[in-house]
Image 1 (spheres, rainbow, N blue to C red):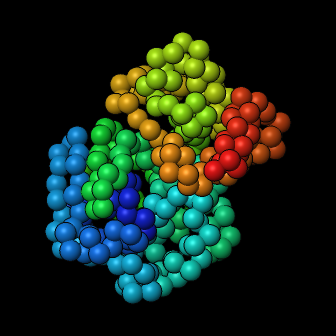
Image 2 (cartoon, rainbow, N blue to C red):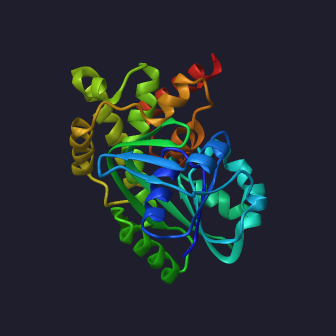
Length: 301
């Protein structure tokens, strides 16, 4: 299958780069990096082995791009309103759109805009950042869970096999489970690194914030269980804590947005999951407080 990456940053550059390195046709949509990547290609510095991609098929407008089999949407979810104009020029009747984004619920909102679209959720467990134009630094991890939202099974499994063939640790996970699994890590660490202006390692080194992070994880697991995702247990929170202990000191994407005074992904990362939990009678008081703090912080830019 042929691929188009919308949002060639830390995530799109890494996964799209791995697919291109494995021999897949990959087209990259870029904005500020367009001229640089067109001339110099993409550099991926990776803990799994660094590589450079020459002759990158780069574009700065989807209207100039051919139609594609798969779109990897790696934009921040705050930019999803742009997809209404960006997607139509590159869609075939059976194009699969993979939302590699944080949060709860973006697939349902996109399906309302494009009722017949084949949609997959992509939940990346990766420490990666863009450190310069066309230059991605992949520090550790790199797996991705794929949850089928509205894609025919044969197309979904073809996508999964392409990721595996590219050396990406990919797994099929039920859609809601995939989204809520990622939220167990995302909701505590993204917001807490902003609220306390720190990094993941320091949050876990302090006994008070370590306990608070764990309690926030258990709120997410409780909400997921209330909604019907029974596979999430305390053992998963323990696994996420151990995984983060082993990570390099890391600033999540929301912390980087805060550092650069960019809008933060509060809606899908906090407001939506808190509202979904409340619909089934489950409250998330610690994370609701964090949501309020983040809204205040963003209002002070």
